[in-house]
Length: 201
Image (cartoon, rainbow, N blue to C red):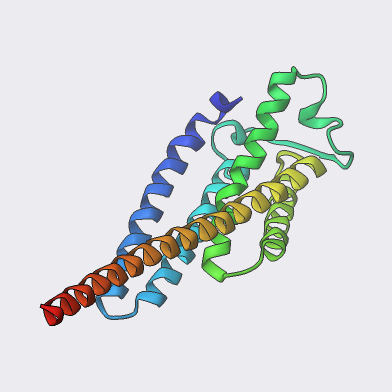
């Protein structure tokens, strides 16, 4: 299935690289002016915008497989449309595609707006709903409830990964700080013992 999106992959890769370079440049530029917190926020805003553009490239842009008009609406999950009369492998790839496409959005939303996972899921649902509606209006693919659910789940996974990353980073920094503090305490204890030894002598 992924071979069908060759043109989208090429353009999406280019857009992703541009978004990353722009995000890092903005972050470093604002850090240089003493606005590091704003720089981090702007960086994640830029990356979020990049993920939205990539989603649009794969779903509604009239290129590659989407250059052919096709309009259908399937309201029953995993029934009809692109999930019927196809191999199990293709179904698995379709599910993986819809999940993976929205994982970066959930990850970036969590950092860009410091929102909870449920709020990120709501935004992901809204974005997916807009995508499925545009697909139907512009006849760029089959609009299905399954895609809506999978896209939302992908956003949730991305936001959850961001939360997990924050927890692991906090624990790592806490452990590092504790190690440094213990080391400083041990050095202070050695210095005290040395002082007492000299006094006794």
